[in-house]
Length: 41
Image (cartoon, rainbow, N blue to C red; front, side):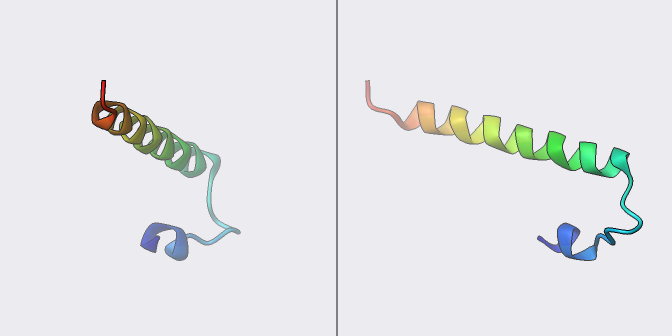
């Protein structure tokens, strides 16, 4: 959250936004993997 709070919408570039989207995708994939590992068989 600190990263988002420190971003200035007027100065944030496309590269930064793409990097954030990539990070969020990685977090989502890790959460899905973790959730699948916890499911009982």
